[in-house]
Image (cartoon, rainbow, N blue to C red; front, side):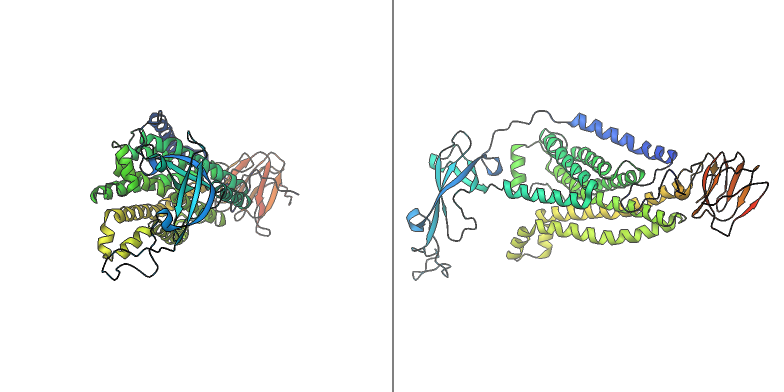
Length: 504
């Protein structure tokens, strides 16, 4: 005979069991106003038309066009005005001069490049490639060229980059296919969340900052929107996801407070390289230190989601494995998982920042400057503050999320009416309390009573109109007909009048 309860215990990647109405109400009372505030912030800060600034013609602010290589030929470097130093001659000839000695026999490449887009499509220019250059050209290769209108005509166009559309698109497709093959529906949801995150970043966060809004406020609103959409889209609308969202929110607030404190205390301006300098020149009203703090928040958000979801899921799985475990045991067990997670995530974050700043660290090594000097220079100090503040938020998210999740599942397990195995609603119309208590089912007699330990794998079907009760760690009384889990075989006994028992 089949067993047809209206619920099942789910493990692994399965959805979290439904929570009680009271618990959902409490969590919604926190998250719904927060979500409404985020929505109001998006509406209030949504940028208007993109500010039209005059191009400076410097760096990334130059006009860009497409071009392609039409011809590559080898020429003597001296014929095209390229002075190449002879190998092994760092300088200093017989006359005591410090200038390098040119290599008259050096061979260079001269590429003819045709502009293929813009108002000057069809114009050609040449580019000389030295023998020791890292970039080489091939006929048919597509390039990105910069345009300087104030330069002489023959110098208006110059190669700035290579077109990488095909390999980058291919890599993105390989990534998407790998995610879908392994993650299946969850993988599709993750890709959708990734698309939403990029859309909010491109359509809201960046334009709103350029529009003059406070970068920190924009980052908080945009980052919160990304967090809510990504979490619920990937992990579903359930209490487990809501707990992860609350843990992420609390950790983001901590990161914002610490970041604001130490960025101000360390007198970090956020204007440390050519890119930030160009932004400050073009848009002097942007708060560069606020932009730095916004970057800290957004950079920490992705890793925070990972940590909080993992910890919430760990608590739920531990609870399913041991439904009778108290709050303290759940918290202690999940924290052991969290400590391993902290160690790996913090190390990952530090190495990620170090890898991004590797060229700069090499320059400091070449300059033979002391560790103290390097660490306290503004460029490096920004990365240190970014790394440590983000890491503190990650560390704090583990006990915050774990404690909240343990409290939630413990409170949910103790709820009263109709609790079934694992804290789920029982199929009958009876009431019960305590872990493992099921809905009672009437027997054919006049109020038979079953007494025994907690319900086991068996089942009893009652078709009569009497009232029955299961005695165990938590007992209850049920009315009406239905099916209830039976105590283990050999440990139950029947008392009272005329009841009839049937095993399935």
